[in-house]
Image 1 (tube, rainbow, N blue to C red):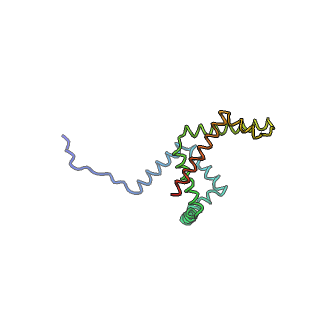
Image 2: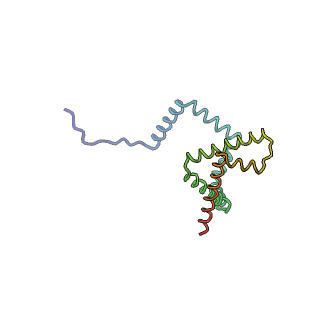
Image 3: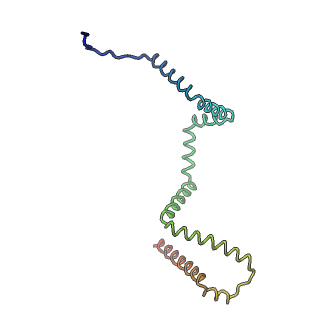
Length: 163
């Protein structure tokens, strides 16, 4: 009968053997992906020829200076004001009902286009009696009510800001 194994010997790999194994794995990988590596090298060559690679390298070396400049520019009053405006507009849009906004924008766009078309076709002067007759038109009356209601609510909100 054979002797029982009492100790397990670990295989120790030297640094040189690790390097050789890594090089062999890289060679295998490069040969398997030869087309992609060739394409990558041609991209790098084009970046080098155009000077983009050199510029990117210089930017990486000067990254701390660039960050200081960007932060300095971002801290300027006009930039912070613009950012605050963008945030305020985003909050406004988030609070609006999308269906209502869609209806208002669609109505506005189509009514402006139609009004422009009608104005181009008819070159008629409008008198005071034409305005009084127009108030009786249900569509015009609805639009006037909408505008007056909007103005009233706008005025209320302006007064709320005062107190």
